[in-house]
Length: 347
Image 1 (tube, rainbow, N blue to C red):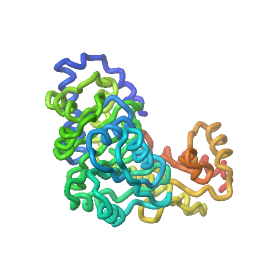
Image 2: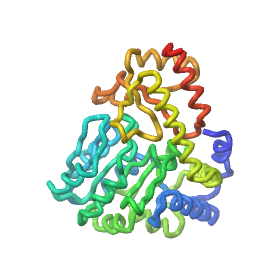
Image 3: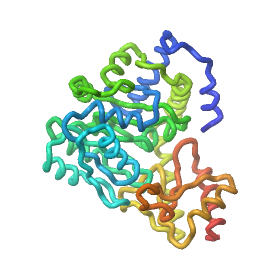
Image 4: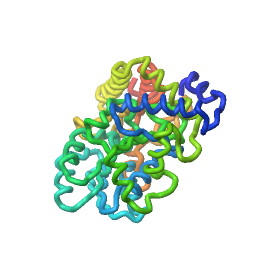
């Protein structure tokens, strides 16, 4: 986090039912709608993005769900369906591969679904799924809604909620917005709200119908994380001052730098070619002990990670993941890569 963003979190507290909070809420929501290029409602929920994911499942399906899975975090969509007693089928691909529109189209022909779940950017494998193209496929399926986990892509790459047919697009505060965790940003379409109004047992804490009623008054149903929302307002102001295109270009430049570093050292990228994430780089750990690299980098003040897959035993120790999101510049990334060069003895 930037020092200035930390200071924004220390803004003096206000009452969450006060006119001052309503003004703050209204401004942040308008900025988020501009960021996401949407006319849909945007809700601010005091929970991690996992809470928002569960809310999607509870609010938007009373038939059957298609849960697209290409890694650890997308697999959680399917796990949440089971935990909430929702009928669901997984659409799984080999880890490192992307979910393709034709896969979703074929699955929608095989069974009657009312909701498709997908992750935009799967950080366990470094895949960025073609959400716009998948949205076009879902758009053609009558009565099917489309919800997307954009936790590690929102604010880091362009997202066009309305044009891409995203009935829900959600993220947490701790990735692209470079804030502490604990706040969820959730865009919810009119079609999703209509569906929610007819779904029973949609939960109490993040009930989209209740959120809509309070959002119309620039409020939240339960006490919001005001400090995080102050921080979000500051970060959005900074983002628009920098310029969206300029910001996204800076993130792309870091991705290109990291990929080139890997290529020059003979480290193959893990994700399928053409679907590489823009917000982190995942490489095969060829010829070195990832656990040892992590320890040595920690001594130098850097925290890096290997593959997220300990529960399924798929990627742990097999990949090296380098993030270029949050409060991170190209020079910060270059410093990290120089340190990796020394640890890996490339130079």
